[in-house]
Length: 460
Image (tube, rainbow, N blue to C red):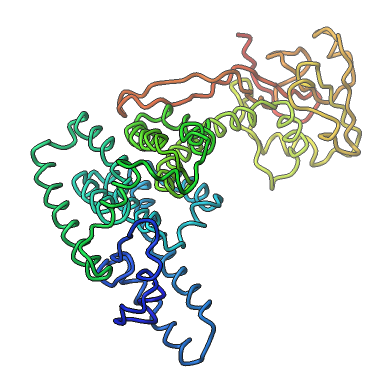
């Protein structure tokens, strides 16, 4: 990219002719012919011109080029993210963005001018078309990526194409016609451009394929002794990512080809993370689905735990009875008076001590000393008091588990969480829902001498 931006048409002084490297690489990703790199040129060229005019260091040009490349890579990832939202919902999309943003390697590599990253942008588009249901476009993107930028994308193309054929998402004949045309177009493009730039007839990625796979000489440039299987299981196949494929069947067809791609790569002795960096978006999708489902379960358990302290809410509302600014709980069938009657008959005019007895059941279901108020409130947790004995005590209120206490009348009751029951909704394609069932109850009573309208009680 440096030579194109600074030397332009003076090919004789290009660096690659003096230092060609192990195998040739394509120039399409660096020229204006490739649409993504056209954006790089458009974004970076004005900055380079200003830098040259101001005689600024070339390192600023490197930053400009990498920022432009990063913007293009992230824009393709944004296209994939939009399809994630359309297929899996906004909650999965949000988790996908969070996981991607908090990962180091993907964002680090997305600005590096490497063939792997140029291929990553095309693969992101392929993933997006895959989720969108435009399967032939996805195959064409992977073919272009494999022929022009990284021949190892064949290891992703083959499992993906096989899955699409087995699921009858594409027809073999139409796929052959579509793919052969893209292969011829891609080969012609890379041979034309790169033969001019290298000053010899060359198909760069074919030479790379021959060197790495046929001659198997990639190990001459370093060997990574941890197998790709273990690498994938450790870094990309975490429990959360595997759980996503199990929790949502829609994820499994996307994960299997990508995981197969990583496993096939294990046959090459020379391995680096950048070789399989294109698998990260799909694994992040699986993890996002798992996180979304876990959040749903967490929401259910949160609701259950929130409703699991009926006694605490009962005492809270008892304290608020005389204050009209606070909403009162719903009255049950044992109470015939209104919330205004309760408020008018109790704390609004009462300045004496108000004794509240809390039975053991209520004490174990949400009431602690932190729930207690100062004067005029007083509290008792005396145990083992028979029901008939309450009317002989001087308690003003009772927070009790029993539905009927002689000498006291019901003010209100608070329902408590009992259990969770899964339920299938056949009207919505058998979507599983979770229902919270309320089977416990805490009842608040007032003595008969309180100025509250009497009501009939139900002994059932």
